[in-house]
Amino acid sequence: MTKSTEASSKYDHLEEMSVNQLLTNINKEDRIVPYAIEQQIEQIEKVVKETAERMHRGGRLFYIGAGTSGRLGVVDASECPPTFGVSHNTVIGIIAGGDSAIRMAVEFAEDDTEQAWKDLQAHSITDLDVVIGIAASGTTPYVIGGVKKCKENDIFTSCIVCNDDSPLAAEVDTPIEVIVGPEFVTGSTRMKAGTAQKLVLNMISTAVMIQLGKVKGNKMVDMQLSNNKLVKRGIQMLMGELSISYEEAKELLDKYGNVRNAINNF
Image (cartoon, rainbow, N blue to C red):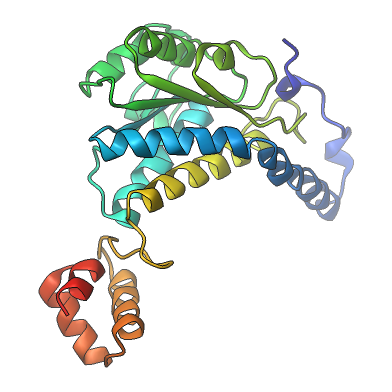
């Protein structure tokens, strides 16, 4: 395979560019990302449908990755409980090297082909669950080893990669290959590749949660009211949905704990 993620940047002598030139050229490269994702909508759709169907039956969604890719999975998973009111065990992000690797790189953690399966087993993974391997290169041993064991155990697998014909894509049921080309800084896949992975993760988790009924109209009716901003948002949702005053909406929200329960009991 040819790694476009490792190919030399289209730009050179970056240190001689003005700040405006740097920002303009980075932004120019970033525009490639949504078009690359558009080419993979059908694959993303397959993953969303399979994931939602399994989660309807009690399954969970796992992300596994190393480095930037692992961190992006952890971020997306951690945002699902406050956004959609699901438990922390519904969407789970696992990073090579453990949670300490979120802040500080753990040397050679991504090279262990057996650890991902051990990490998944710690969550009592079953064949109802879905595992999405995230690796810009598509060659990360930690992720490849994990999805291989998943397939051996009849667990549905997908991946988000940024190279064509990668070993990881060859191992999963439904690969998502978002080809964004060389990075502005050669090999720095936290840039376009990371942006592409984050956007795809947003699409998957949001679409799955909508399929699970976690959104009403266009509102996050199951969101956790974990700060004043979200409480005010909940009050405004109730005022708009039920045509009631601020005071009435606040009283309902205080009584029933979230927007959905307040609407259902109005």
